[in-house]
Image 1 (tube, rainbow, N blue to C red):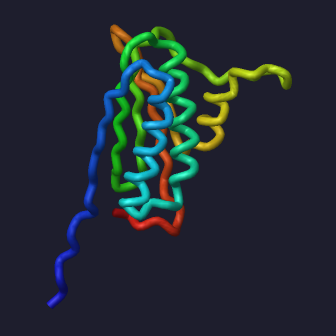
Image 2 (cartoon, helix red, strand yellow):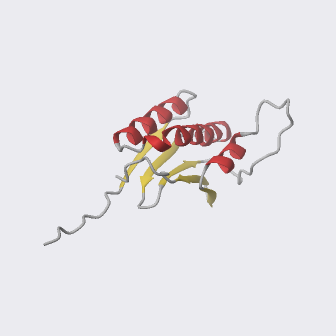
Length: 138
């Protein structure tokens, strides 16, 4: 008799971070730890880079705390960053000498999907990265 397959375990973690420049490092370390524990090492570097860009953007454009959620779905790993900043961020084409303005271009280039949802008092920016072969689907 064949043993029934169990559904893939899915999970969600969330962080509320203060408006503090050290928060970006805390979020990076947390995501690295969560993905390593979930045996998703194949996406750690990409997700860490992308969350750095998105949380830095939230810090620069909002003067309040930010909430970060991390969700393992059957298809991918999704990160959503809620902040109180107004407007819809768009990738820029900075000049070679510009020191800023590349973050969303990096997100656009490295994420499998990404987007922004507006809310009455802010926005939620999200991105997904799918494991590509050498990650445990847990």
